[in-house]
Length: 292
Image (cartoon, rainbow, N blue to C red; front, top):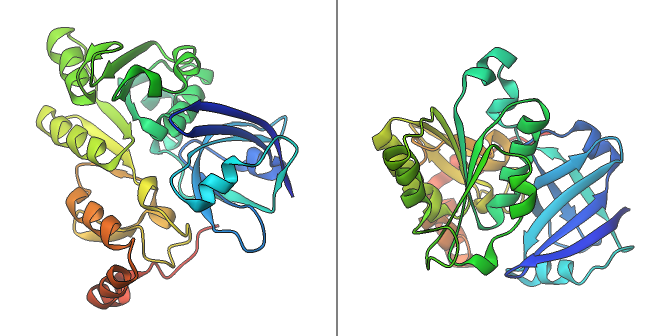
């Protein structure tokens, strides 16, 4: 059993929990995810890791109540336990695989939106603790749904905020903020990591492709089962078929077919849609391997 040590309401039906999971905390890296099950009959819920403390054996997760399972999960309190807390799963951020010299040369910008701010924070904190400075954009519709602002500000060189309604920071979206930094403030970046809603990542990638800046995205929003066997997170990356949970969740954003991924995401919500996808995609509908 995995005990909940802390529970905090962040904003917009978004919750933060610290969970006691020593083995996961000792083994994980930024960019990876866990799968949580509340009880024997509970749904498998894949969640990217927001933070971890290997010494204390704690994993921090952030989730939004969007369905029955996450709504029930939000009813759990400090002292309650999850039956299953599996991880770390997925591949770590590609930044973790670079040498010290390679990281020192990078000019990195993170772009965070919604619940995607949580996995962005994990990477930003890891870089800061290892002596690397990065810039961060948090974009939101309005000020009151921004999360982890103080935590992010304490772990990056510069934090920039944009809101669609202009209630905080720059009035505009994340792309407007990127344009402002590069074209108006003279900022230079050679590596961007964008994590958030699919539509946000799509338009960030369209912009950065024009600007010639390598961009990595996390496709965790399309994961369902977390093992590659359900077929939900199948996506086209360049000329290859990939699965977010076993091949990612991070990919080169300029190669991801976002339109196809968003269409599949909508179809997968219905039984008829899942049946049609399985018929159309044949043997490539599922990833025929598990990641451990």
